[in-house]
Image (tube, rainbow over all chains, first blue to last red; front, side, top):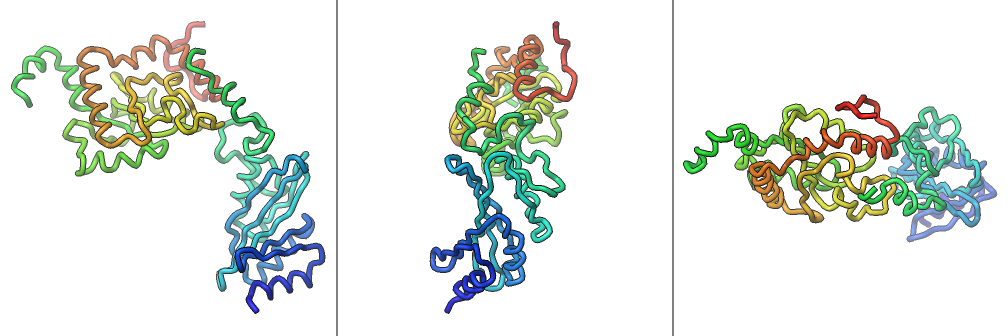
Amino acid sequence: MGKEKELKEEIESTFKDTQIAISLGRKLIVTTKKELILNLLNFLKDRGLKHLSAISCVDWIRRGEFELIYHISSYQDGLPLMLKTRIHRDNPKFITVIPIFKNAQTYEREIWEMFGIKFEENPRLIPLFLDRWKETPPFRKDFDTREYVEKTFADKSS
Amino acid sequence: MDRTSIRKWLKVPDKMGQKYSLWVVYFCTGCGVIEIPPVITSRWDAERFGVIPVATSRQANLFLITGYVSVKTLRAIIRTYEQMPEPKYTVGFGSCPINGGMYWDSYNTIKHLDKYVPIDGWIAGCMPRPEAIFIAVTHLWTMIDKGMATGYIKYKENYEYYRNNQEKVLGGLDWPPLYSVKK
């Protein structure tokens, strides 16, 4: 039995509200409730998955949800894992994972800038790439890029 | 030096001096900067044309903007341009500064750079070859000879237009106007 199946059984026995799938042979995809994220990350870090590669975000506009995905992996056996959770789309807030993974600061700052999700207790949520942005965060699905471009960078004639 | 150009040197020494010593700020905004190392090193050797990269904008008189210009970099471009001593010439390199190029509907990329700083010449293409820089430089020589490279004079004359555009897209500049703005 491979390591991923061991880990899958371990997670399933410890946490009840998780769905786990294995894709591409060995990649674990763990879907869970948002309350369990900190516990799960702590649990996985103790199991050797000590590297947080990225945090990504998906805007599911019709369901009114944001999906946050934590990509973590292990240095010992290279086991990759995706930890997914969903939060509400209006007035989005989430808890920071800096106490567990320090490098999450920049990723959370970028998601805050591009999607407008506020990570509570993140000490440094200041603009990263954008310059004095006042509109809807640009990576949201309801932000119309074409319209914004026509409004801001109008043709040469104007 | 060519013997036939001695008359020219005696007639308009300032123009000839500007022509053959284009000191350049390579503004590394985007992917275009990858063409610069072969240009300034031994493969194409820009110094044959008197083109030398310099440390600061205060020593330069040619401004080469290589690649796309994001809104954040535009602020730096304007500052760099305003710091350069006159006469100064600007060349946009690649298709992105001309009309946005492949970023034509991007939320964070400037589309027409000549609305914000005056541009004397464009090098079109994505990417232009290093030879294109030399074609641009020789074209610029002709333009200087004929008195057509007058971007910096236009900037002074139409400063209000440029400043308005800059303030509109950047949401306010942090420094006072370079020239007096008529109210």
